[in-house]
Amino acid sequence: MIPRYTRADMAKIWEPENRFRIWLEIETLACEAQAELGVIPKEVVPVIREKGNFNIERIDAIEAEVKHDVIAFLTSVAEFVGPEARFIHQGMTSSDVLDTCLSVQMVQAADELLADLDMLLESLKVRAMEHKETVCMGRSHGIHAEPVTFGLKLASFHAEMQRNRTRLQAARENIATGAISGAVGTFANIDPFVEEYVCGKMGLTPEPVSSQVIPRDRHAEYFCVLAIIASSIERIAIEVRHLQRTEVLEAEEQFTKGQKGSSAMPHKRNPILSENLTGQARYVRAMCIPALENVALWHERDISHSSVERYIAPDATVALDFSLRRLNGLIRNLVVYPENMLRNLNQMKGLVFSQKILLDLTQSGVSREDSYRLVQKNAMKVWEQGADFQTELLADPEVVGALGEAKIREAFNLNYHLKHVDTIFKRVFGV
Image: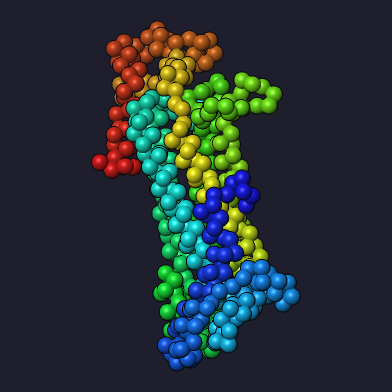
């Protein structure tokens, strides 16, 4: 991921220093377990623990020759440890180190993303409470439907992100597995105790059947969850982009002092943050297909998954981390225009109350078909002639005959549509 979209805390998880440090810890813990079993001398463990280190430039130089990253790493470590290094990697295979390390890194990344989600959830809650009763137009198909509140929109986003947090927590738990089972995963040359010991120390659980590699369905689930979160981010971004359109202007991204909207048009204030989030979502979702294709490996293992994971693991987590932080700032600083919301709500001269009239007519004894005909007939006059909906209904003898003038006027009460806002908020946020 390019620096423009990278936060340092997430980037550090995927840097060589962190990866090789995890590798070294896995190898050292394995030595501790092997010493407890009597496979290697106990006295070598303190030496490995004390002297164990690596040099990244040296690893790169060795790998250029041997074409094997784990061998290059072990050679570098041996140069620091000395003769005792011969006991390192006893009975292990490369995947024991690589897959267990990747699980640790993905857990670390998930923890960063969970923290991001917690911040976003708090911001959504604060703004939802702020605009709980801010009335705005609800739209279906992009067309005016019935009144809602802006707080309800934000509450919907909060509920979705809470589900995403639950999904990510589950994916974190499912990826937190390690494998120290040796070639083809049979433990022929290494005792299962070593796996249990290493995993316990690393905060992982042993993979039940590793077949030398950890099954990639776990990884596929992880990346698919990231893609779902990205899609949820885009849903919010799309809403902001629509609401910021000039002819709507019900909400807009904060336009900071000194900011420029266009190189050609000085008047522009564009929804660049939301548009950026839409693009980022496309990128994160693109990681799903290779992750799913990685599930099917040849026999006990191959390395067709390896190269693609070196891309998608850092890039997907870095991009989503950036997106969540950007969305959090967008929501926190979002500028809301309640007066424009009311203006837009009244734009169609009362049409948004058509369903209430329809229901009142049916409850007064008019058939649903006739009720629909009467309401639609008067509604079309608003669309086609710019008439006022309530005025047309009051002038229609069939409607007045069925409902009476008072009942018609009562149907245009805005509070009718908001009477259950508290119920919905309690469902989302509790009491």
